[in-house]
Image 1 (cartoon, rainbow, N blue to C red):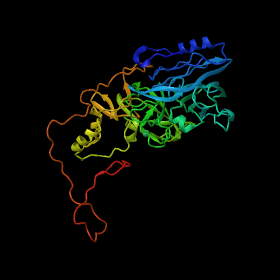
Image 2: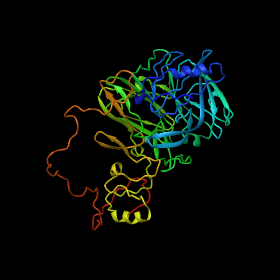
Image 3: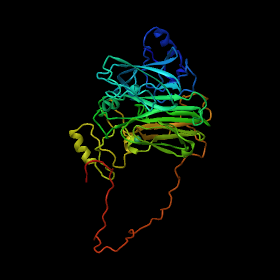
Image 4: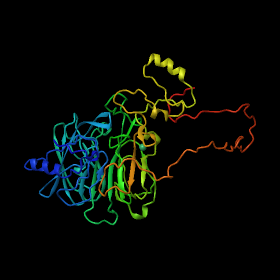
Length: 471
Ligand SMILES: [Cu+2]
């Protein structure tokens, strides 16, 4: 069992050595010794120690699986097993994954590589692995019942194919999928081009992660797998903000970010401060004529998108899903909106019956981020993350792109908060501004009403789907 050290924690570069050690010990064995990762930290890119060279990716809060070369074949060993995943500091979930983590390790190969993947099943039920997006022999496609028998608990299956086209792919079970994907079984796959490619630009930084979602009851640790839409934890690589590492780059870097969506809804992923182009999907590199400049790209269920941009604006730039419910953590979905309701007396009465009871949001929900609300053990506040100016009031699918002039090439360490040049931060006005002019009166009507209402009607806007009406 090998642990790779915490790269972003400052332990320094470690690549290659682990792969070499495990290969040496297992060289004579029929199977490569499985490599297990116990840390949820972002690991240094795995510089290839054998096989054809390539520019490795960085998996956000994840790692790349080492391999061994045997008779010209690149051999990997995946172990499907129950894992404990730290989804944010202080919050651990009982998931299923591969080689100690959920998601499983990223697999990186080069176009034309012959790849052999041993899959050992240590789950309590059968599984299989489907190699999403790959051109391969039909019998290697990993669909239980259709192209192969299920891999029973305790058994090992072998998949073998040539990585025929370069691009951005993923892997996941095609056996009891509803359960196994809801429990976190998935991983990233990158096939690098074997030579200069007209549609694949060399980049300075290449990040990958999967979009996933869980329904974990606050206070418990195991996802409910029957949930179809009402998930409460929206994660990137099974991490939730503020537990998601920032993407740290050097000013002027060409940056690629590859994402795959294995949740049950779409995610419009939005980057601040820069325009990007979608340069690839799980279908391969996109033709140049299709590449629009955008700041948000919607990733549908089962899709992959790779975006590229030049990081030419220094700062700490938000990078997140634009569905506002997806940048929240462990929210009760039945919470009524109480904006404008004075509920102090009600709270006092209920608190006598239910200790720790608290009603949210008579001034909006932002209070929740700062309040020390008593929450059950092993869950995370709905919104959080302390920034240099206070609470960021975000959770879930949120991170920060940090662009710095003095970030060294190849250095992925977190540079800390951005130091804004004087005069470039929004500021509070010192004096009281004059009352702004307001437009008064009713809106126009296309035709006069025959019986106009005697009094005006006012309504309160309530969160869509916010549950039961409360007046
Ligand atoms: Cu989303």
